[in-house]
Length: 123
Image (cartoon, rainbow, N blue to C red; front, side, top):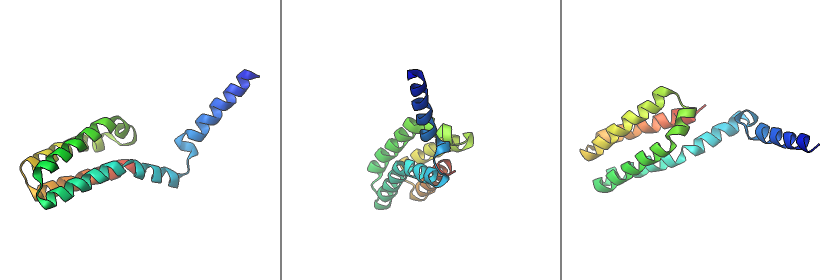
């Protein structure tokens, strides 16, 4: 009997916590919220670049890269190879644009990163 109860609890947990048990609209909301830290960091870098605070923008760009490296394994699970490899490439380009104090190119790279993040977190 105890084994049956344990199995039932195990089964219930995995059925209610699995992505298949969550409605599609709730999955989309969860994924879009998951990308929120990236969007906030991108917006912060954009504001700093607008104001010409390049040292602070470099620091925030480094923080964005660290955030990406920390969450990369999750992005690899939900995105495809081209998307997360594209993020690696765009992060490098962003760092170079910020170092060169190139406002236009920095904005282009931030937009590309935002787009890739959005694509990864959308279903």
